[in-house]
Length: 117
Image (cartoon, rainbow, N blue to C red):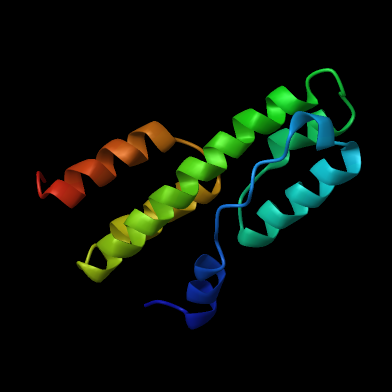
């Protein structure tokens, strides 16, 4: 059973523009963390970057790439839900929002989307 409030959360997931290194202040990073968190992503690994100006941008870029991949996975998961893969979609969506196991999820999505199950 799908909750309409859940669908509203996931439809608000979108790619945000990348932040240039010169613009990535502590305040800007905190705002981006809020934006990603509001979409439902677990971006707790960015907390260490708030007080570490030396590696702030590198950490941000790593998490940004995970979020980018996760957004693409969510789009594909939504297509699978339409095809009837409800239970597997819920499990994958949870992991994607945690930004964990993206390689495995992408591989599984490739299998399911191609019909090689």
